[in-house]
Image 1 (tube, rainbow, N blue to C red):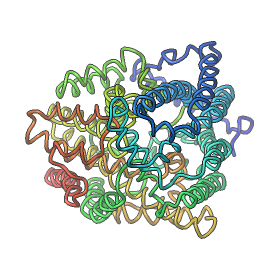
Image 2: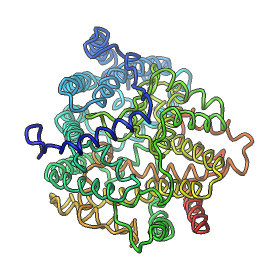
Image 3: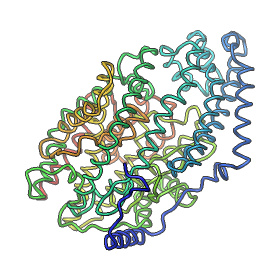
Image 4: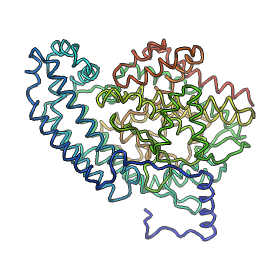
Length: 619
């Protein structure tokens, strides 16, 4: 492993070239914004932060003293609805406070996961929040022990009826609840279990450096080179990724095995039948709906990814593309760095064309420093929109490097941000949206941006490049994520029979990749350990199908919008504003859509296929 002491010395000429190139890129990007976390707390050592942490601990103890062991008796009182409503309101207020504290610690940490001070701050905060939130575990458990008929009666009455959607959702967890002391043990042990392994993964990934053409690059910068116009640059980046990942396989295999076993133990105790059932429950989606999605996408591999990559290989004058060319820009198409100001204006104008209200919300992220855009060493890779809590506002993290896909990522994350702002009035308990619908606004934002750019592009080559890039994004969102889901299923099923070696994991990875990408992509030596860096496998097992769900859903929604725009905005904003208060079937019904219908998924898949057909006609 390369360390600061034995890092290879960069040849002087190469060093100057790399420095000059980095400087040119930085100048082309313009000034990139960094977020202002003082909206939450002024600093890690701020008295306000310490005071809120102490207040949260005290209020948790007082809440437990007031209500623990008493909820079933309260439910029998004449004023049960009023008393329980007061309890839920207090619980929600405390949940918001705890969420604010933990959001701040998490955002500070994500800004540089390699900084020991930030890591300690994050770890210490997690410790304290875990301890005080243990005091609150009883509340949901005891609410679910109230007789179902009694709860239905009192939750239908005001003022408790305000939280009925949350109470109904909570009741779905009842079959998987454990005895109180076991729940407390699971909760407290998570700090030295899943949370600790998550942190090890994050800090390991952030500390990796990849030697590419004489430079030592972070993961984000190296992955970015896979989109370079120069095939030699893409190959060098891919080889560096494969070499460094392979050198870390032992660590990543241990993390994966441990977390899969941890999940298996939890699932067994909670009596979940299938490895993904806990995720389906959290998403409030039925297993058969997800199974229908997965089956539809896998059946479509030949007419989507296989067909497209065969076409792309032909554009490059080959029968097969190497895996590092999968996301390569089209040959003979001008590549340029897109300045931040242009990316901002592009997304905001696309949002504004659909709805000035949407653009107005998105503009606040720029004007009020809610975005952190630079790709810094140690910063969490990828991108996210963190909702924080309803009493504050969301924050967006990007690693912006001026590629067309970075503009789409900005559109995507701002879509999340708009959704989170609109859902916030539901309160801390009902604002969070299940993952199946959480990708709706983000993917819709991407589609709006893409369609606007495409409509303004007259040059045939540029239009072809844009359409190809969109098809690739959709394949990455639908086909690739379902392949990821298939990989996770194989890993978790196989782990039941014993620990998996690193090579076992690599073999499972290669099997699903070959199936999904097709024969036009050559998965050569070096690609085997690329499963290592996917954070969703670690942080949120089986999260990935939500992307495919969201993309197919948005394709269907956009079709409704194109065919009948009148009244669409109102229905769309109602969907986003609902947060977690309604099931996906209720929210999609006004659009005439039903995710339980197997034909529903074909709408989205057919849209992707239509774009591929259009590209075939451009040859």
